Image 1 (cartoon, rainbow, N blue to C red):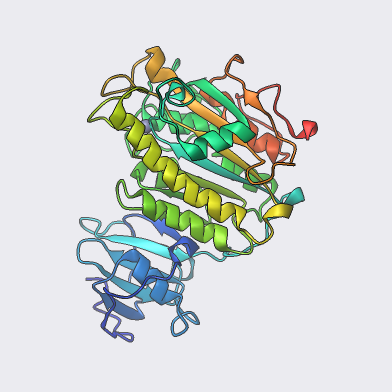
Image 2 (cartoon, rainbow, N blue to C red; image 1 turned 180 degrees about the vertical axis):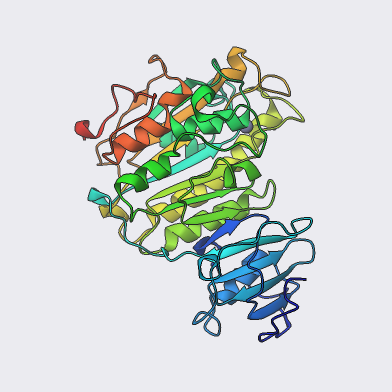
Length: 394
Ligand SMILES: [Zn+2]
């Protein structure tokens, strides 16, 4: 037990029934790690959200800057130290029972990008590009609204030089390279990006830019995440509402993060049917679309939204065929791609517009080149943006 040697103020507060104000989004999550010692207060019967809320309340906010969470037993230790204050995190506890949450110094930091530009990247795992905008397909209102006001590609090509698995697919989305360069060849969680994540490329030019990631698939908050991420959350498996709540929290700040990655897992249905006309697949799409609706609503209600310039990017990591993916069939390679910077601003000039499916577009040409271009950052990657998209056209 890591708390044996420092007693602190071990008030055992029963907080299981506490109403959880939002605050988890202010933290950076590190799995399988903890600060050894330096436990100022111990809490029992709590969720990570409750620990975060307590850490940030009026009684604790003056000193609490991190906590370690005991996954199996629902306890946490609040601390007045960050890892950097105490020589780093301990990562070799037997059985890895802890996760570490560090309050980010960058909460509410102003966006340094000229023009108040931001990007919101919505990752929908396993969504075939041909599963929307076709006869008999799901009719997801939020995705349709983004398509109507922006640009849409129904066949961004995943795979080819790599398998159509999630790890390589997200890595290509995030880096603008294929697996031979980015190094992620499978879903092995130990694999890490060998090329910079696009969010780290933003920070290279704008060190004060803030970046945020929320995902339930563990690879996305470990080897596939931006190393410089300021805010990292891992929601419970398949619990999209938790991820949505964290994004809504980020969007509630006066100064939202410069770049957000928001991951929705549930369209990726290995138990069933990657099929645009399948009712189960369609329902999964509609359910995640309802999550996106909440986020878009939070976005347009930002106090300064009229003066901010948000590019919303929707991308998937691969398609699928029957109950699987990984191979090179057209259905498995077919990923969705949407760009929209006019949501809730009908008079704004679109970054690009219309159905662009006739243009060749591979996965390395999708997320990364367009995010960099929109933010006015030179593109050092192997990906190339669509010629009809561009800030210069605005
Ligand atoms: Zn996937």
